Amino acid sequence: MNYETTHFFNSRGDISEEKKMSGISQDWEPVVIRKKAPTSAARKDEKAVNAARRSGAEIETVKKSNAGSNRAASSSTSLNTRKLDEDTENLSHEKVPTELKKAIMQARQDKKLTQSQLAQLINEKPQIIQEYESGKAIPNQQIISKLERALGAKLRGKK
Image (cartoon, rainbow, N blue to C red; front, side):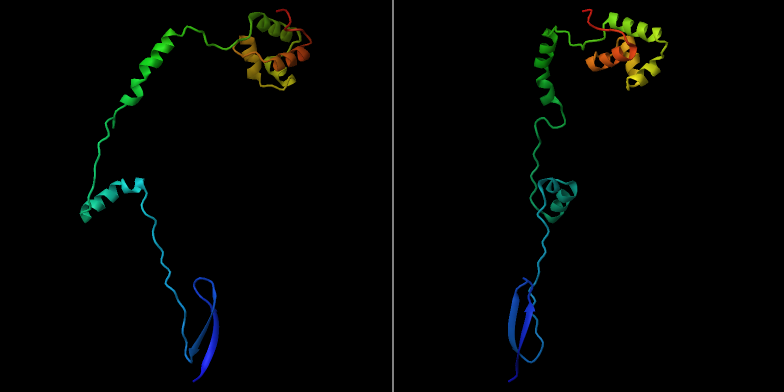
C-alpha cells in the first residue's frame, strides 16, 4: 500500500498530520454560527409577541399599576411645592450697582468712545459693555479692572 503524509491547518488553526491512502481527504469541521438570544426589549417587541402568538407559545401580559399615568411623579410634588412655598429666600444674582453703571458711561463719554470701541479696547464683546451700562451684567472683577485701565478712571473702591 502507498501511504502519504499531509500537513495542513484544520478549522481550529492546529497543524495536523494525517496519513492516508492515496486519495484526497480533508479535515473539515462544521462551523456553527448562532444568533444571539433576543434581549428582553426584543422579546417585548410587538413583532416578536405576534410571532409567539402565531406559533402558539405561552404569553404573559402584566399591567403595571401606574402605566400610562403620571401618578408616581406627581405624588411627591406636594412636598416639594410646600417647601417652595415656605421658602422666602430671594434667589437672584448680583447686578451692576447704579454708581458703577453711571461711572462707566461717564468715563466712556469723556473719552469720546462708543460702546463697541470700548469693547474692542478691552477685548470683549460690545454686548458686555451694553449689559454693564444697563445694569444687567453680573459684576466680574476682571472686566471691571479692564474697563478701569482702558478708561483711565477708578470705577470701584468707593464701597
